[in-house]
Image 1 (tube, rainbow, N blue to C red):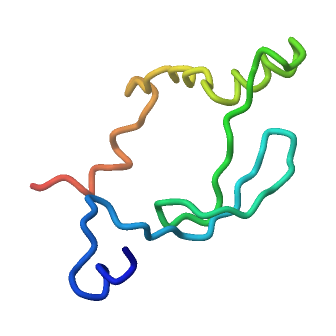
Image 2: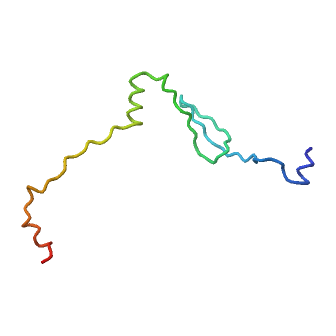
Image 3: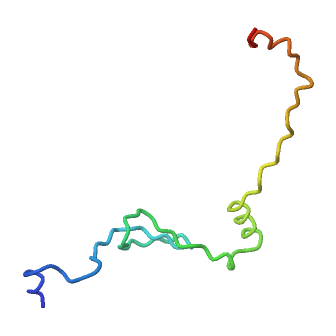
Length: 90
């Protein structure tokens, strides 16, 4: 009954507060809808099985980049210690 809400509170676990959100589909089309969390844009995940093989590999490379190469360590053999003598305590 609609009069029941005027007399007491709503007997619900969750209240129906929905926020306006822009949904972006995988083909680039957009839809305005209402969502339970306040966000600006929601993007649907891309189905990688529909992509060509080259584009799928390129996306995987961007998502999981390779580790940077370890640089060789510096050795102190070629350093002249006389130039840094003024910084030592006497």
